[in-house]
Length: 105
Length: 105
DNA sequence: TTCATATGTAATAAAAATATTACATATGGT
DNA sequence: ACCATATGTAATATTTTTATTACATATGAA
Image (cartoon, rainbow over all chains, first blue to last red; front, side, top):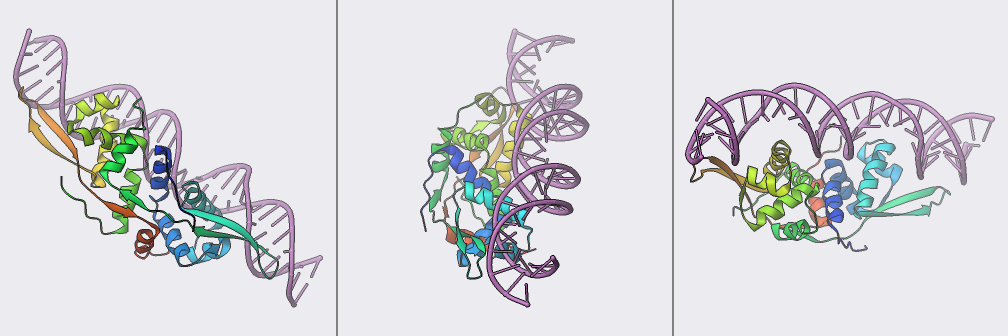
């Protein structure tokens, strides 16, 4: 697992936004057990691929997941998603630090 | 400061959603310096009160802020907002625990 | 009584997020 | 050639969030 580094307040709002939808939390839960390729994940989640792609895109932009292509034994290209590691201490102090980076107006 | 207790996954998605907008992070930053009443906060933030109310409502529902009325020396009713304390260890493990509470479909 | 400053909210507009449908390519096996 | 299973995405509809405008009440001071 790679580890997540956040610097800007946009990084954090992107992260929080990514975690603000239950289906995306669920995706993280499913991927935490083992990495999965997109179609597999869509079946497990009982979700259409286009919708899953949208959610994965948000998780990806928030640097919560990564992916890599792999050719299966039967020759198919599979896009495997997996969780990146992170460890954020969410407190009023952190938010205060972040708020200093945000201009008023 | 009161301390925040979260139990359901809704509590967490509500919290993350509340923190997904830069203006709300900024509000937390401003309030962390000292408690403020609504009109005062609106001036500092250079924001209309109706819009600020909407953002405060989200922070309130996420249990990040609380408020109380107070009568000023000049007899006006003031609604003071302040930060509640919290300390959340945001890791893939936490999200995995949360995801167990979220049903598929 | 009028002004300034608090409060609160309803109605609406604008923008963004969420979700669906439909289409497209590529591969290997039957 | 056709089917099943991967990939990807464009176009659209629906819903929610964000933001604005307008109105309303109450208080004390001038």
